Length: 426
Image (cartoon, rainbow, N blue to C red):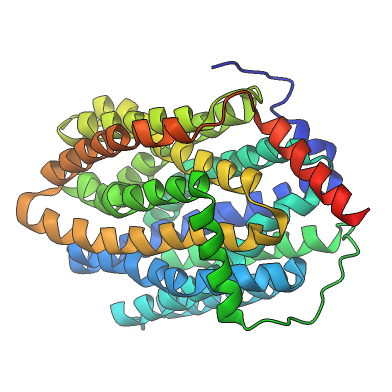
């Protein structure tokens, strides 16, 4: 596995990408503060692992239902306008949460309804925002660096956001977390305002939205090397990634802590996630992404197994770092594979399908994990999830190995794609 520090930050050659990165950094920080506050409010009010799963389900399942349509919208319309609209609506959602909590007139069902609304917003925001990265980089060969740096930024937000949120929850309450998140959406709108936007002509759609959506699934079926990666991610999303549903239980019951403890655990997971994305951004272009995908899945499973029955908080935190490393490296590698190998006219839909896999499987998995942990306990449930991760990696080892194309690296694939586009236009 070769690493190049020179290529790590190459995406910052683009002013547009730099603006994108700064705006999203602020917004992601606020997002993690809000998520931490919402989960903690629900758990302290209900003391139910199942309700934690239901909270995750409420936010992410609507994204599963609508993100494919969000992908079609990203391919059809101006991505910059879509993102601006989603930021405004997200700001309103955060303000409503703040008002409810700060006036102390909220019920759990209201929190869940607002989570559903946010899930619908994210269904259109994430495909547009992710596929926008392809437009804001200077050189197509910078795409892996841009995607990895964006994931690293999200990981840093996951590292710092929950820790700060835990402190604010103890000192000032959840309402302040929601207000800070509302303010953070302005950073994205400002960054878009300062970008030099490409002169993209958006033709009036000629096909029905469902037909365009079906084309995306047909394309992935034909491109089995991409489709199998998404299948693997779907299984991990259903059975393994919902491990974070149990983090509040570990904070309060296993480690006998409070909101600050919860924030610290999430932040240590974030440390590992940052390390994973920085490593991916530093890899040489010849690195085998599918081997990295399998290895990161094994690392994730190992971290979960070790964390599950470590009762000492200090001893458990290194394993939390390993969990974060494996989980983020696994998802980011999938994202790089899909975005770098999908043809441009299908990229928005391909991204939306990979997000559908996450938004659909993770919330369903959260319900399963919450229900199972009520019966066998959080520690045993986490142990089983770790074992399942390693089993999935073993199953896909030979499948993905066969799908690797020898003699090609990321740069070559991107250059070939650019050449094809050039020839078509010529």
